[in-house]
Image (cartoon, rainbow, N blue to C red; front, side):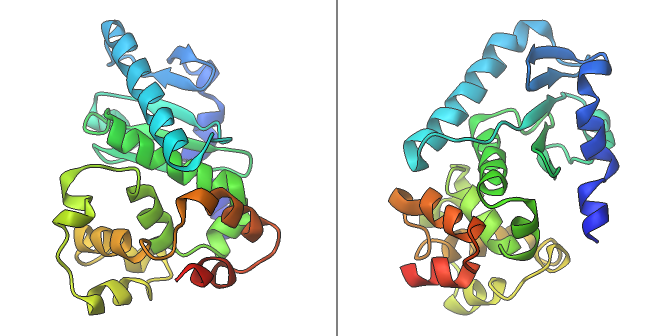
Length: 218
C-alpha cells in the first residue's frame, strides 16, 4: 500500500512537469495549454491570497507544493483529479492539481493546508498516524465555501462522532461524502488551536501519537 502511495503515476508525472511543455508560472506552478495566458495575473493573485490566508491563520507555511492548473476537466482527470482539485503525495513534496472549478482561493488554500500538514509531520506519519477525517477537517478550516462553514452545518453529535471512526480513505470518500466533509469540519473544532497548530504537528513528527497531541486540546 505504501509503495503505491509513494510512487503513483500522477505523483511521478509531477516530477517531470518542467519537461512536459507546461507553461511555468514560477518554479512550482505550471499551466496546461488550455489555460489562457491572460489569466496569469489572476491566478498568481489567487495563489498569493491563499498563502496569505494560511499564514494569517496558522503562521508562515514551509511546504512548497507543485501546482498544476488546467481549465479542462479531461486534463484534470488525466492528473487524477475531478473538476475541482486534488493533491498527490510524494516523499519529498506534494503535487496539487487545480481543475476548472478549483481555481479560487478557497480550494487553493484547502489543498495548501493538506500539503503543509504533510510537510510538517512527514509522509509516513500522514499516511499512518493522522486520520483522514482530521486531514480533511483541518483543510476545511481555510475553506470558506458556504456548505463547509460551521454556521451552515447542522449535524447531530452522533454523525460527527461517527466520522471520527473513518480511519481509511475508502471509508471517508464513500456514502454521503459532503456530509462526511461537514462532519470532519465540525470534529476538528475542539481539537485545533490556531496558536499552536504547527507546534502540535511538529510533536507528531517527533514521535507523539495523534491522540496524545490533539486530544489533549479537548
